[in-house]
Length: 381
Image 1 (cartoon, rainbow, N blue to C red):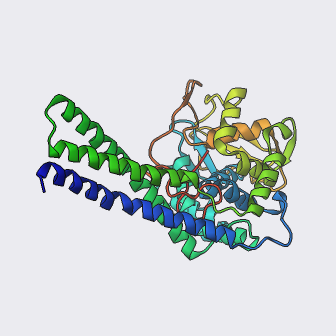
Image 2 (tube, helix red, strand yellow):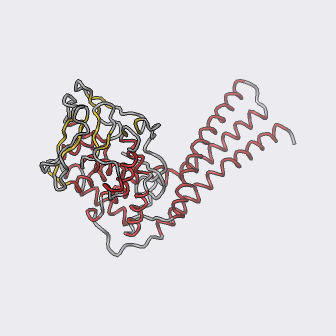
Image 3 (cartoon, rainbow, N blue to C red):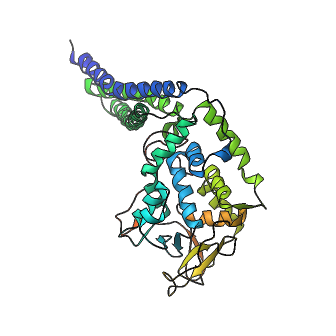
């Protein structure tokens, strides 16, 4: 057989051999996820959003990352962490023995993360939460209510789904590069078997991995969900109940405030806080924290000389308004509001997860967003 024919055929076979791997991986995982969701029985009684804990509601809406946002806000509202006005780092308030002070597993793991560290960013705390063993317990409770599908096989299928999708996206870029490079070479120089093989290889890779990427995105991509139809109904009701328009000018208790964070997310609430122009001016101290001893949540500034001294004990039955909650959310959101000593605000935040912790990286990871069952977090707001 002539080399000008044989070499392009070999290019096509090579493209098929490489491109079929992520396609099969994504397709099989796609079917497994759909079958797992379809196999969950319809609950005898669909729970209302207020019957779920804030962490359960957060996972149903936005996966492990949203749970991390809720727990971060819970720690801030309870005065367990304070935020430094410079750099946006959070430092721990009170004892560091998480096993004694914290009953919630996710909170416990975040408090433990402060050990041997000067501070953590919001990103680092949320990332820590996404890998907490407490997330598994939240998933189990949602699965018991038949709001999500959850099993060891499903966790593996989700991991394969994300692996296949990631590989397909990278190979699509490689295929496009080969295709464009081959066309340029054919146009600029004479056509031969190798340039044709490059075009064929790039074309096959682009087509197969385009199909893989299409399947991946059709199931939700990084925001893949394992919510059942009952879970989707609870989510829609929660979005109506805890929408922005239904809460303004109202006071709320901490549990309700955390449910708003679960449904809306720190990012959107933080933007609301920034538009309102509320907040501290940074002139009164080096750190800010929430105190609730008076029965309402308010932000106080602590000068450097007082940081670490005894502060008012938190009160369990306190209230706060929507404006204050958005203000707190802006301080807790990733890349949230930083205040300099002259009172000027800036947005940015540190790219690292913790101070002197080697960086915790981004809070996003495997596709757990939207009530997913996989590891890591994704789809953070």
